[in-house]
Length: 148
Image 1 (tube, one colour):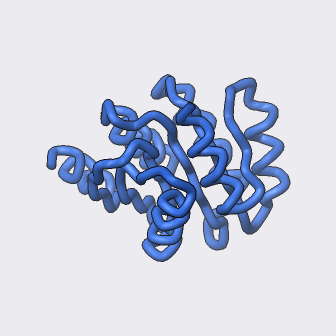
Image 2 (cartoon, rainbow, N blue to C red):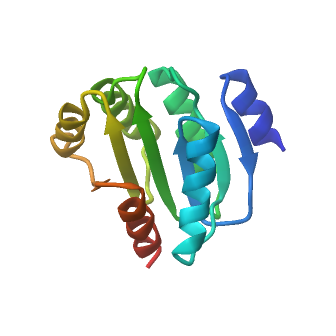
């Protein structure tokens, strides 16, 4: 899969699947939980994409490029736990990457962890149509609902 090769060049772990909700998550365990809860709510994940514990804005840009290149992807769900990575830094990276890539599908973002309130404010003030989620269950429900 050329997407896996592209992901590898940017230290991203990517596996393509058959669903229609693209997932960008930090940490394999969180990625597995995200895919499970999407399935629980009646949809299917389009991929497993782990950006790791210290993703740069460049990596987020590349992740969005890989995810949006899949014509089956009808919504993107970003689920980040900011422990080492701070949520405000992640939020800025997500906003800048989304602008740079020109995301044309619904973008659902769930942030939790260090500086989460500042991160949520950055998303809200971005002027972009980013759907904020309060927790993983809320994020999955919103992603499934965004499919139409």
